[in-house]
Length: 146
Image (cartoon, rainbow, N blue to C red; front, side, top):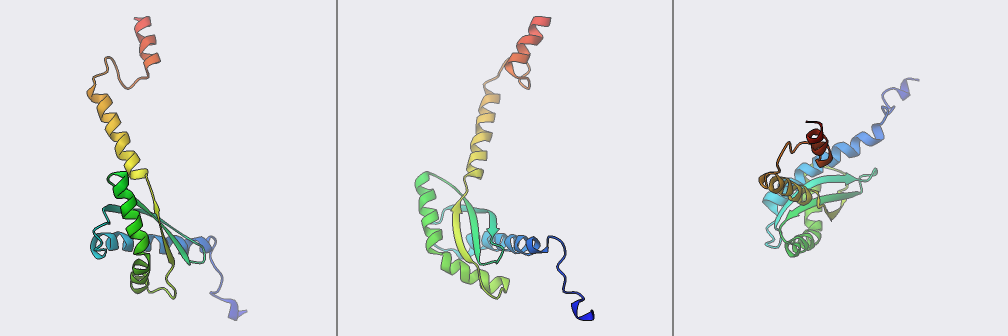
């Protein structure tokens, strides 16, 4: 019985390691994008999240790129071209037995959030009369009751 001690995997243990390694990869990718990639085609890119396969062989790296659609396409192409370089750096920095294959995917969420915030600010500056926190139909009901 003593041979089996300490070998059991805690509940959910199969998910914990990929999530932990994915977070380490996200931190490293942020540094690589900031300091190590010298390609002038890479614009203002941010690593938003990393999804790692259970076997740690494939890392999907979601990247948000600020700029025009042409700048975004150029940045994503440059990142794809640098995936081998990035994979090598990850292997050196993380000390994994095998570096995961790196796949860069465009993530529009940051750009969408910025656009949404801009629309909210524009709506606030237009000066909607009455309590702007209430939907229009509720504001009309309040006026009818007065």
